[in-house]
Image (cartoon, rainbow, N blue to C red; front, side, top):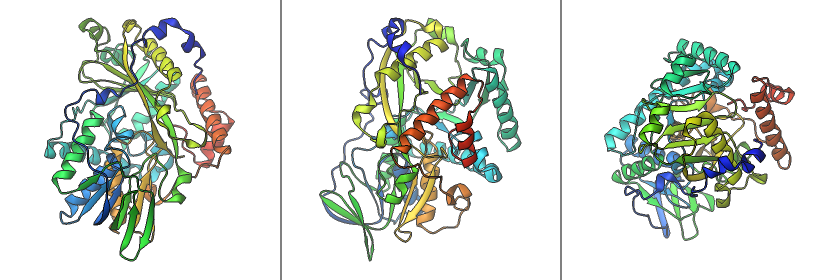
Length: 475
């Protein structure tokens, strides 16, 4: 929870935001956006009905058809394909299935070697799928650097590198000179370089490419058709929309941040808003001043962290740090623009790259992400196994949604797989308390995390108590 007062009043910072538009950079006049789909009108039958047409829903549909081409699959979306987090994220496609190695190590230590291997396999399979279907999404296997901004963070990344390499990863600790040689910022003290564990993509084009792949296999997609309730019927589950219904043998819920149609799952997830800025394209002189020749994705090593990357036209996308929770977990379009957070982001950007002072930010937006108390996805079933869901990606879902979809299909098909045997799949996170305690709980935790970042990572009594309870506020 940041103190915005200084940034809000600083005219030097605000001048950089003078021409910013509240628009998604990814959707700015892109010719690859496919045509709209009709709303569902009337009754329809299917073997599998998927609710939600973001990454999770589209991966579920694609994998279901690849496993069984004869299976009839219908996808129902309340807005349009990719309208939620899938079309508005930063495009970091990371192999981690647990929102970072440390978060997974603290919760699933005994199976972390398997989880890490499955995460790498999952990322490779995404790359193969993109090639197989000819998806144009600016896929770049650039790798990622997590940069330490303080001495205590250097120690943490050194310990992480040792653990990860022992489990089969191949990461490298870069000292101050080495990391600044790659990307020139006076803020960097060291870096953890993972050369192949992250790819950068255009997230909207990835959604559209998955959509086209699904259509090519015979998947039916309906948009602007909010599923209002599920009815348990003899032949399966009937999903009711305002103008029609789909009766299917099995239903996969891919609703992400929106209230789950399985009411008992709602207590495990809260929506938090994340925000991003994009600069104008860098000039040759500006680019030379920062280097960044290998175009790696970058993130901070603190508890509250930024993520940033180069786009395909040489702009810089800069996001993260603030995570805004609104009372009662409301998800509204007006929350997608936050002037105070944009001022904070711009201020931090200029501290990281002071040589870019004067650069203009052109686009700014936000979006809600579903988070749970362990900061990584969880699964469940209902209606005697006829309905399955996956939730809780916490903003690192570009790659892990494919794994989430594959696991959800395993559960629906009643398969015993390496995925379904994982304790991270069999166990759920601790639920959030009800309001108003939830709001107090989250705000106190955010304040404590901010304090820890400012005090060499030292966790106060509140965070230590959360650690003891197994809550996930350490990513």
